[in-house]
Length: 314
Image (cartoon, rainbow, N blue to C red; front, side, top):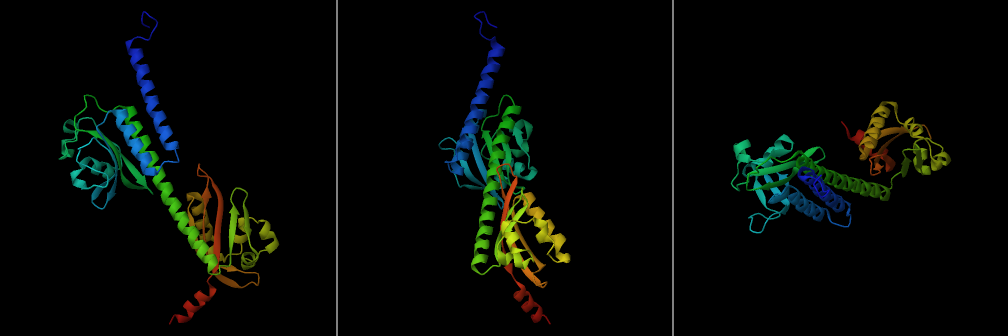
């Protein structure tokens, strides 16, 4: 402690640094919690926060389009010569190209000293960039950089900080793609019902209660009264043709595990002990932690179509 009871120099510096880091983490928390902001507005705010946190001149969020790097959001000084929407050939942004190719965070406090082969025409001499993923593929990069080499390399905290930001962006991109996919599936289901689908279902996954209408139940040879109250999934699976049953079971399990959409074509024994061809479409709804909750869907009878196809074969 100092003579006046205050922290000594090194302790005071550490306390100040911890306070500074916590302040930036708090800013990030507030940005990503603000659901009233548009996604790109949130990214703009994260870029500004990231740039301030590591003392960088530039911050950019870009995606790869064929052989070009497209700057979707940027935080740069006026007159920097780059704007939102600019597309730059990947060879002209070698550091971003390296991140995309390796799918790993690139940390260069001094480009000329550490990786002179990655020098570029814009004179970026320090670079910290992390990959952005969407559906397990690299979508682009989230980077912080400057035109002067740093006297010290980026710290472990700074690397962790940018990876925190890039991971959040990746998660949001994947959720938005999944939402669009589920929305498309829902529209397909509504169209199927409008076109005269056999019926719809709602499966309460945790309780294993599969609720259907009467027409759907008769298609599977299940008591309609019981089905309207809810029956275990296995009771419906037992009605599927034995040659199709294992495949359909796996496809259902895959949809539940991935919280994704579902489509399957198979044969089922109906209440009259006759085989019907059906196509089932649905999607799995999960909570924020990825736990599957419900599995709604629609069933369409395609028996006539199958018979027509068979009759048309030579």
